[in-house]
Image (cartoon, rainbow, N blue to C red):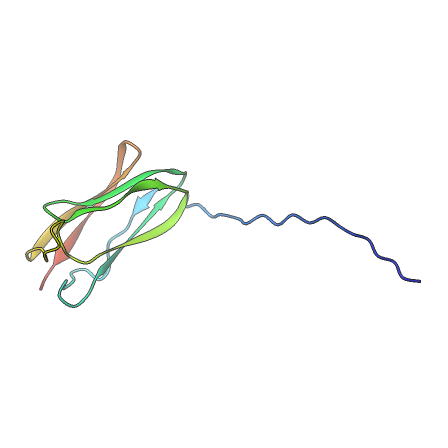
Length: 110
C-alpha cells in the first residue's frame, strides 16, 4: 500500500543585518589609482538611505536607499571629471539617512 501526503513548505531567505551601521577602512590603503582600485566596506543595521562621499574632489560613491546588510563600494581614485586625484589623504564620510555614521581617510599614492 502506497501512502503519500502533500505538505506545504514555505522557504524564507534569512537576511543577516549587522548589529550597528558602520564604515571600515578601505583596502588597499594607501593605493595607487594608476594600477588598482580600493574597496570600502560598510553596513546598515536597518534599511535606510546610505551616502558615501570622498571629499576634496573624490565624489559621491553611494547615494541610494539600501536594505540592511553588509556592502562594499569601489573607488578608482578618480574625481567627478574622470581624472585621477592628486597624491594625498582624502576624507570619506558615511551617512545613514540624515546622520553621520563614521569617516575614514583614504590615502592615494601614485
